[in-house]
Length: 378
Image (cartoon, rainbow, N blue to C red; front, side):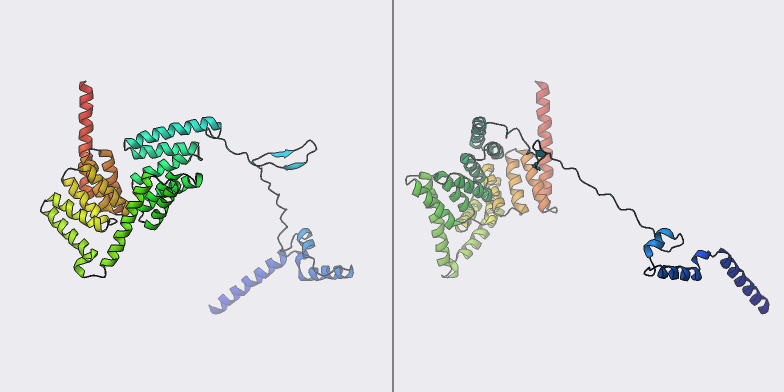
């Protein structure tokens, strides 16, 4: 059986060799390649020419050349400016023209003035968001109007957004460096940011330009008092622990919390206020006093304290909880919902904010239904 298998394998290998010999092209045999190279050398060639074989020899192992790719040219989106002889440079892309850019200077100034008057009315009504929008539209219409920047800075100060207030105040100074009110805005913004030395310099500049400026005098006196308070605090740190402001702050907080827990809200307001006298940039005291004012149903004061806490610590969910409660008490339901949702973005697990949001939404829906019923009855 072994001899038979061997004979079969030999016969198969012989069959494969015969088939290869029949299919081999004479032009691709080793002898023909050698003859071709010999003929080239006799004709003065330099050996194997890959390019020639690739193009003329159908049995060459080299791939054929690819045709050159066409050059792609991009169309320009702007036209060329050339003279009659074809000389010139390529033109630039034309600038976009909007409705404001098409206004003449007189119309632009008149439109900006209208926005300013509208913003002033909103500010007097304490509609600060609307006032910001009006002053911003005026600035878009006439960016060179220093009064609009000054007024918007004042609104930002009223909203305790002192960083933006300072930017607008500095812009007003840049547009009109000899205007005392612009420096007064700079002083107020720096005071809010607790940059007391910068605020002092700004108010001194106000009085340098207008020695009888009442706003400058009042602002400088307030800053000097705060500077004196800071210096006094530094001196107190060297005394005994009982006279240490930190110790006093701790005592004020503890007594205020105890009064609040005992539902003696007026006493709680008193102690939290004492803490704020020692440290007016402590967001916890602003938040706690806001809660005490809410319990006394003094919602305007509660909202002001909550806004101060947010200004000092914008990423603090509890401050938004205080704001939502005060707005709820003022029956400003939509604003209350917005404040609660902002707080939940910062602390999604806050049970207090979740309950507050649910309660305000229920009351808002109830008020909307009552209003609809009254309107249908009339």
